[in-house]
Length: 391
Ligand code: FAD
Ligand code: DHB
Image (cartoon, rainbow, N blue to C red; front, side):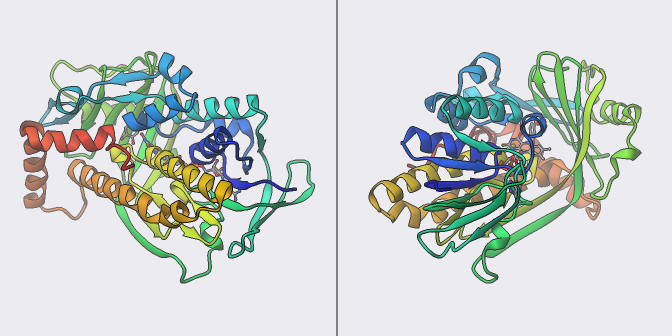
């Protein structure tokens, strides 16, 4: 088998890359470990930055997002039992859109299949070879058990944090920067109408809590929990009781409903540099992870593949290596800005087991300043809605 770009992973990064390359007349094959149903059901991100929304729309895959996504002009920071709204529209003239990651994934899969794209779900044993040459190869086993070899001009490692592409780079060729946090998030999806029309990021002495949503009838909620917390120890009743306690504020009533899904996710910051080794290009969570507090992970994955599609188009159409050579540095500028923002939001809003009363007062001072100073609120807002792409 032969294709121009072998793409490993059918998350937002791999699927959008395949679509953007198709628009440029470049063919690709997407290889995904899981089955289609699993990929389309996996509940993860929910907040799209304005540049992400504009990119999806310009690429012709924004119709359902525009019809069903929920545009939001601000968020609330809740502390001292009261809300402090950050008005994105007034401060930046921009907004975010709440639209589930699995909906983006469904839209991209539908579009690739309608365009005759080669998406292979349920593959196994994926391995990359000869990435130092101009003819790298991917070996894998198809869902029907047939062993395959896919000759490519370039390979895109879009296989997420636990994928195989990053580890296939020889030791010493990549530098890793990482940081772990002393907590995790317990996330629930509930069949209950949102209790407020916008997201609420809550600082509470018992820990962070987040009120978000997916639709007018589905709420998404998160609780800070210890890093090794077992989901089995959290009955639905215990989850609701803790959410009521942390989200309490005058005039606010949390609507309950059946819990459709729940899980615990660890939190880390992680970056590898460079995001390229020969003809293997890493994109999205395969190259970097941010803690979820700034809602940046999927948006960064999308920014990476936008750049990668331009670099691969120049490389494969006319042999122009310049964008490919600049790919890693150009992506890493945005990645480190998002790392800082996500670390800052996380540090301001969570309780840390090692903190003393002095450090807790510093957090509250930072929250009060962010909520009341226009320059400070603008800094949060411009990062949250997404800084413009730098080219
Ligand atoms: P993934 O979505 O992880 O896709 C990688 C794909 O590769 C998967 O389908 C996987 O099955 C496949 N794969 C893995 N190994 C192999 C292999 N060996 N062979 C073939 N295929 C393989 N981001 C935001 O922007 N906003 C948010 O609001 C937000 N909230 C989040 C909340 C939570 C609780 C979590 C966990 C994450 C959140 N994120 C958020 C982050 C976001 O979900 C990720 O950054 C995003 O999924 C990255 O996309 P990706 O395509 O790089 O990787
Ligand atoms: C959601 C997730 C986030 O990480 C965040 O910061 C805001 C919202 C969500 O899943 O809705």
